[in-house]
Image (cartoon, rainbow, N blue to C red; front, side, top):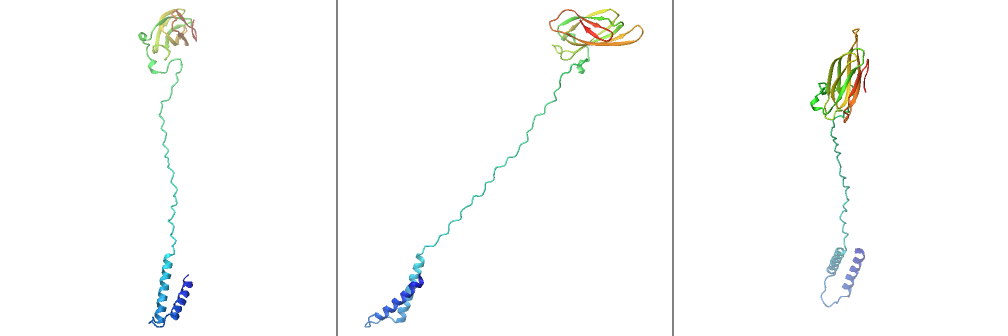
Length: 205
């Protein structure tokens, strides 16, 4: 634009100088030319100021990725349980609390039992052991009966529950042996129970 306006202004200045009135004092041609040039530069400056300048756009904020929350695994603590113990039905209870004479006064109702010696020898000792957990009143322990001769009997009272019986036998020739077996005295049964000791086994009838 500056190149197009500047020649026009120069031509206009020369034209005014040539056509001006001669009678009145006029400015010197050099002053007119300088004035025209100054006016031309003023218009050029004004024109440049009027041109809108491109305003730079503000920088666009780039969204930074939001870190995901982290989760710390909490160890699961389980309660420690004692090992389970299953009840065992053994000949003689392994519980040391049952290796004692039976407390007859706290073992509840009793039934009569008759020990019959059919072993052929003398029963030097018969041990009757009430199995742990079988008595309604929570009692366990042993009853001992001594010296039952051949073909003899002995009657005692025994509490309800499961019993293990063991007999030591002495024969006439000096040899010895033993017999064992089990029986149950049920709740509500009050009749006499026969415990028969044979040469190697003990049976109830």
